Image (cartoon, rainbow, N blue to C red; front, side, top):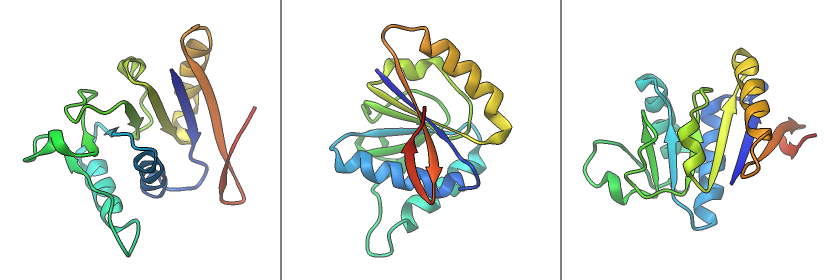
Length: 145
């Protein structure tokens, strides 16, 4: 499985989440977005609605009607009631349950840098995991060393 580490160096999480969600949907995959904080989930919910002024990213939140039918689902935990194969850890907290998915996006900022390094070291030792690091370069994401 692949784990993509995205270091948010000055870019708000509410900007990155819709970008990655849109690409995930373009590839025909379902996505579970995990954030433990209800306030952050609300910010991300709004960002998914307003990402593209000409459309929206179809999504919902766990516990709402039809949450199992949503291609993108916001949740406080890693239970993919929408049958997602991809998971995004949007609050900077690594969760080992992400290893049960086909692909994981781990978003973190400078406050969580030590946590991300610890997760990287742990995952790099696993034969079944391919960790990748992404950083921004002039506004575009580039895979780093």
